[in-house]
Length: 566
Image 1 (cartoon, helix red, strand yellow):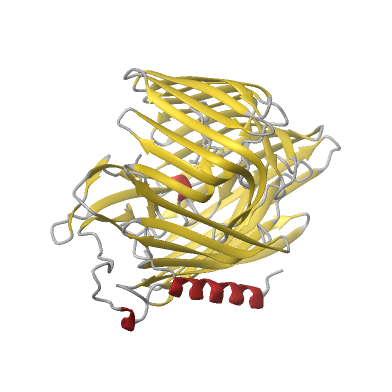
Image 2: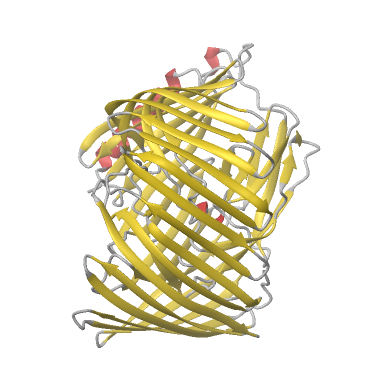
């Protein structure tokens, strides 16, 4: 339950902390989340020679703290405090992002063809949410991660953790062709044997991903609680074939391990899918077949949809969902959606639903201005861990408002694997100073912070020239997000050429996206000489998007737009 007094007290503590710490740029996040049963905040601090964060709040009724600081020493990055170490392997081809939570002192460095990370300290249990970062100390630990390019096509990875349950995993990734990657991982994971192998082939028309993983039930790589993440085990395969740009067939078989709630034991489920998505002019249609098994209970589901776009004024679609279980429980769900497009920044949605003999009407839409951004959708998901009624229609909400200056309020919803909707509410702001928050501290001192002179800046928009807020952009090792106008900016100390990538899976805005146009690299230039980087993305319907590790989503209010070629 959200406590406004606790939340306000935490933000006041963070603001006071910002005034006494000798940093020059601050970002303060705070909020509450029913998904994590947490409320609190984090302050991020940046100065010319270091960056740090401090988090405070309550998690599951207990007050928690967390802090981390990073600085450069003789070309090495030194980290002290709570660090979420990315624990990825080349056999992780199905998009799961994993971390290992530890508390101590770490040193890392990246070379042209290799890199390492070492840490000594304690394992920790990460607690908090996206806006509140803290941890609880546990057992002594030593970490050594290393990677190296052996040849142009062969890459070696080593992941070693020494603790009460040690892990030592060695991996090779081989890329004999641009379209083909194979990998293998073996060793000890949490004190038990671990083996995985994978093949990832991306050809002109066919995309094929296949892996096999032998994983002990005690293996704990995902120590950061994330109920929207899973650990693949046994055989997993996914194939997508593009007969044409408008005709796509997808087949998948998945074996999953994941927690159904924060800090709960891992559960296992199996899911199979066969679906097709088609478009003919302004008409679009498709169908899917699904099966899942969880706790010795089977369920079967089918879905069908059809829709039509009437120029840029109206989109109408209808969907039918049917599921059955081993005890002959049957679920019927019929939906009809009507979206009136008033302008590129404003549309209205009505969703008519018939289920279990009852009819209901829901309303939503999207409204975007430079100050206010809100989107209310309704989505139907097939949940592999909810075998009694796997199809679940839920509210999807994402909104933000810029109150004054850099202060922004945010709200969003998400669906847990058990089908329950969870909510998060928060606030974000920035504070700046040159020599201190108060003028009397000497804003003209020699150690006053000066903004770096070189920048990379640009805009992310869709094919209708509509800006995309909350788009995730990776520039070198930094991940940044676009503001409410779709713009982004990263400041650098010097001219530098860096890799550039768009990360649709980390977009803050609701929906599915793919990249249409984006550079592979960018260069930082002086601000008055910097050219704007233009990124174009396409909003996908869930029918076009491939099945995810936890659920297949059908957002009936995201139609296929005519002329949006891949």
